[in-house]
Amino acid sequence: MTTFKNQTKKSRIVVGLSGGVDSAVTAYLLKKQGHEVVAIFMKNWEGDDDDEFCSSNIDFVDAAAVADVLGIEIEHVNFAAEYKDRVFTEFLREYSAGRTPNPDILCNAEIKFKAFLDHAVATGAEKIATGHYARVRLNEATAKYELLKGLDNTKDQSYFLYRLNQAQLSKTLFPVGELHKTEVRRIADEIGLPNAKKKDSTGICFIGERPFREFLNRYIANQPGPIKDETGRVVGKHVGLSFYTLGQRQGLGIGGVRGAPEVPWFVARKDMVSNTLIAVQGHDHPLLLSHKLTALDVSWVAGEPPVSGDYAAKTRYRQADSACVFGIAGSLTQQGFALDFQDAQWAVTPGQSAVLYDGEVCLGGGVILQ
Image 1 (cartoon, rainbow, N blue to C red):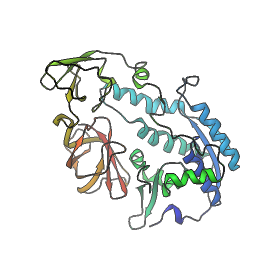
Image 2: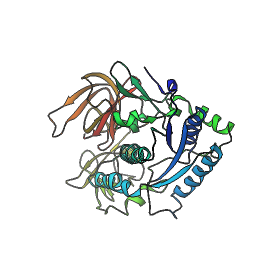
Image 3: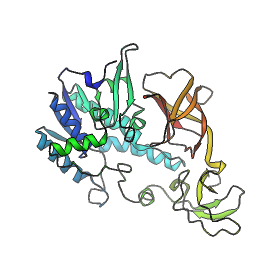
Image 4: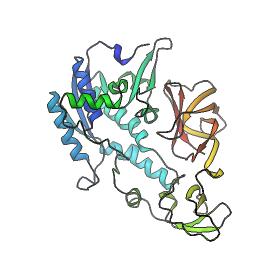
């Protein structure tokens, strides 16, 4: 097996410098190894630059400061048009259909490892690198590149990268995937990087820290309707099905229902036909648990699906791997797959991704249908 650590060939590598500490240390490590390193800052969103929730301008200042300390060139590239066409449009389409998409997964596949990769190669780059906590390995027995989990299990980001293909992985490096976050912070502090203690970014990239419902309300019309329990009794009113996700507890506005115990309510189903939100009481209510799922819009790292059998999977980020049986669901309208879990999964959400693993190897996945 050939890993990042074993690579000795000196290359021209373009690093996606985000302004965060992970990509900054990525650039440092590659330069330390003797590579020709240049940086690109990707601007993927426009329209909120003066908004208190948008950090794009601040992030670029931080990225430029890091580039200055490391002595590397940095280019500011605007991918906002591509992002709007390939990611944001799909994001709105999914929410309008009552599903809960993960735009960061699509952003990685369409922007960071497609638009960015294409731009980098056009400027003469042999490889690109980002600060993701994942690893790439060439399996010499199969001559296929494998996507591996990052060594730091608490930071592993392979879930967000499952749509990457062989061509993309062959030109990608993830240096910090070999490290733990504490070591990355230590290196950044040791070499005097200005963002060594910068807080990790959270939330969807184009929404930032702003209230999600407030943002979505700009683009999707409200269609209020009833909230019912599993018996059909009306227990509240929703502001529009697009603004809720399965498993959601906050923001339901349900309380003091006559005859109901004082137990938290959770979103369990969406009935798009009747515009009804189904809510249940109790975290472990049967309607919130499921042993099976089907997925479409599949993407396999190796370019083909694995053989049917026993694997592990995640149905959301930061979830522990869960044992399952994988099978191809060819009877679906598009090629998909089915998973049968050993343990019941909580709030499996249409629109999110089910990602399949064989040990530390991320095999790929698909978008959950049901």
